[in-house]
Amino acid sequence: MSSTYWGLCFYDVHYRVLTLPLLRVKATVTIKEINAQVKLTQTFGNDSPNPIEAIYSFPVPARAAVCGFTMIRQNGTRVVAVVQEKAEAQQTYDTAIAQGKTASLMAQQTPDVFQVSVGNIAPQEEVQVELVYATELTEDEESDSVRFLLPVHIGSRYGSGPSLFTPNSSSFININVAIETMTPIRKIGCPSHSISTELGPDPVLPNANQLPFSNYARISLSADTPLQKDFVLTILSAGLDTPRCVAELHPEHDTIGMALTLVPRFSLPDRPNQEFIFLVDRSGSMDGNRIAAARKALVVMLRSLPHKNAVFQIASFGSHSDLLWKAGSRPYNQETLDEATKFVDSMGANYGGTGIRMALAMCFRARDKNRAMSIFLLTDGDAWDLNGVLDQVTRAVDAAPLKTRVFCLGIGNSASTAMCEGIARVGNGACMMVGEQESTMTGKIARLVRLPSHR
Image 1 (tube, rainbow, N blue to C red):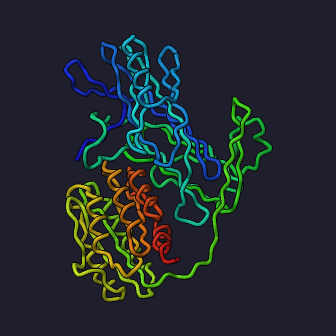
Image 2 (cartoon, rainbow, N blue to C red; image 1 turned 60 degrees about the vertical axis):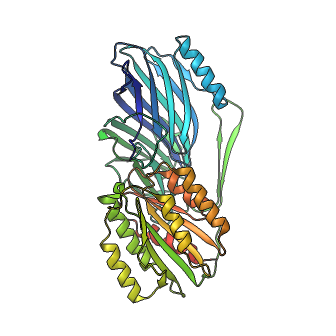
Image 3 (cartoon, helix red, strand yellow; image 1 turned 120 degrees about the horizontal axis):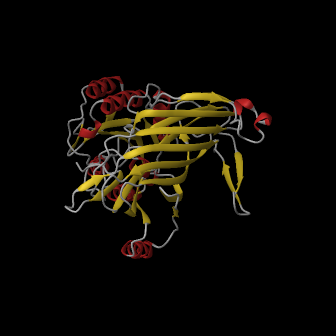
């Protein structure tokens, strides 16, 4: 198990890794319909007697687009990032550091982890690191509900990571969210934290009195909240799945950004004679609430399967992997359902490391080649072998004799969106994320299982 790396870190003269205290964290979020813009500002302090070069690693949703990065020094100097080819950017950074200048370099480690090098931070100086990104919201439990995720923690991941730095232990966060919808907001929830909610548009808006009161809300979460789990917000507003087009003017240039949203509606016949394999992560990182959530989700999945000549199997994995029924999948009936449910109730997180690629390979080998197959992977995705896993799924799906799809249920407060969403994308499936202590997830899990039941 490799260490988890995030925050500002640096090497001292003895090549030990030291961390800069994370003093303050502020997230300013604007949600409009099913899209969000996030400005994340983290303030660090250098309490060492010497100038340092530090490393800053931070999580973002895998589907997000980073659109701004700025370093702000204590004297007010703003160092705004520009995009360059990777080798050119590294050379520009190295030259600036050698000349004694303050510089920063940002690079993508994985689709959901970025790393920034910040050079020549003066002694006793505070430095603000400001990141801006845009992201889409995802479907949530109820119809017409969406889910916003603000990742603030990178969970410990199995395998060799891309960095050599240790994490800060804890810090405090201040989150402010402004919500705007086209129809009245019916409900706002936060399964991860306790929040304050205020309905209506922000009074500072120039036309606040003319805006529809029930279409706006403001959410805040202040201090005394350690960065130990991701922030999750759910919004219920009528008609979120109706076609819409949103346009926005650029604040400085004479350009317009537009987003067109269409949700297809089809009446599709059921697909009979399918094979369903439920692949459950039982590695050490799933211990406690995560494996409990996996057991709960799996019971719902088993009871949501179609009955038209379906067969199913349960596979477990960690450092090794195995099947419930060694001879292959069995017909879906009351007898096998009872046996499977009893097995699920006994599941623990005692399988060691997170060998996702090995486990998927086992499922692809064990499949019934005369049936269409759907794999449902339940995992926290805490492994660094992202490219290897995605390549495994891509090759297996392309080579399958009959239609094969891979779905993923990401479990946990710091589940890897890059791994979970990536597997579903290359597997022609779908991904849903749930917190390890969410009480309402039955609906979304049942919908996930029904997806491959249609042609």
